[in-house]
Length: 395
Image (cartoon, rainbow, N blue to C red):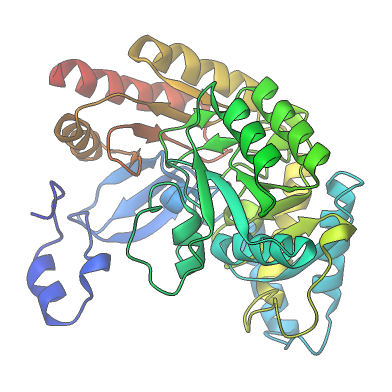
């Protein structure tokens, strides 16, 4: 056992032998395949994937057009350095700029995951302003690098030596606007405010539109960058391409990842020209903007534009099924908060045993459901049936 999770057979011994302890497997079977919202285990079971694996497979497992796009690009060009451009790199950059608000008129695509995109935004806010501090929310999650771990609200007191530690943290409640206003009036060292429109790892906390609008007003008034971390919300999860569109608040920088190229490493930062302040060599990674990932992302955006995934109707199904247990969410991103940690882990484990994979929040007290966009209404009802059975059985 490891903190309440079952390991695969021999997992602990294997980890002691050669795996670092932070990657000890938590599931007692191996994935051998998948299709759509279902994946298959080596013991023959089929599992409904309401975690989208790492909250990223927006089109589910092995979406045929994405796989074909990757294969076609591999035959053409498998890699190029940042000293060169390629058609897919340029085409995707242009497409992303066309999709975002007119004020987000520049794009950095030489990134591999959400941590890179958020760190890019932090660097740019600091360089543009000449100020060190970034305001974030307690409970937030912005990445796994030293700097983004330090910025994340669940790690703000973590032992991450080497990070700038130049962060301030707000509670995600109705007092945050006044507290932010006070800081911006009294301090002259704040470069930016970073917000997840939906704080998934914090237990699916959805910021009210009014709060986000007030934060936007404050950032504009005091000349502070507003950064939206939409690594977990962009590309269809909430029914619009970006969550900021549904909420009606435009940031100065927009961090993108996960569902940009579902299942392939790619991230991006869309930004206002004011933050185009870094020179060559300061903000690009070796495998950032990988042509295969770019080809997948272009196909993904085409699919999103041409397909009605009926997110509003599916959102309604999830709302009706989860609200009675205190559920909250937006689009296909839902959480059922307020659980005793041991009980939440039991529900998580028992649901998996019944063929439903969920996620747990960072503090492990909230059960998170985030199925892929192409999940069917039948599969949603099936998942809700399993969840309700386990929930009532654990009461």
